[in-house]
Image (cartoon, rainbow, N blue to C red; front, side, top):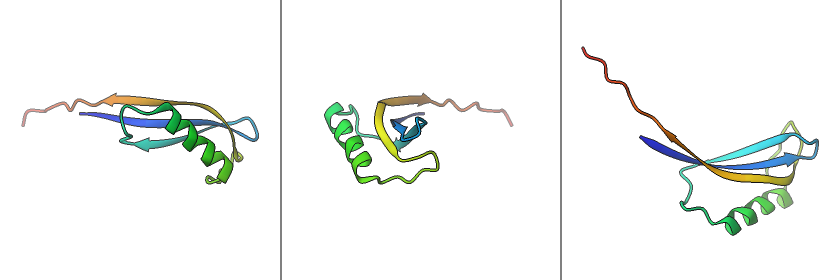
Length: 74
């Protein structure tokens, strides 16, 4: 089984890293749409975090994960 997650990575007002993860993103991702969404998130201060407000875009990436179950004999 394979799954993908879109990770939106930011730098906070205190210089900390912050990640917002989105399961099952649209693929392939449109860089302009992702950047616009991230800019909106910063401008609207939509996420309250103990590490500080989102201040700037660090990057974005799609992370793929493959999971293979191991079958046991009864």
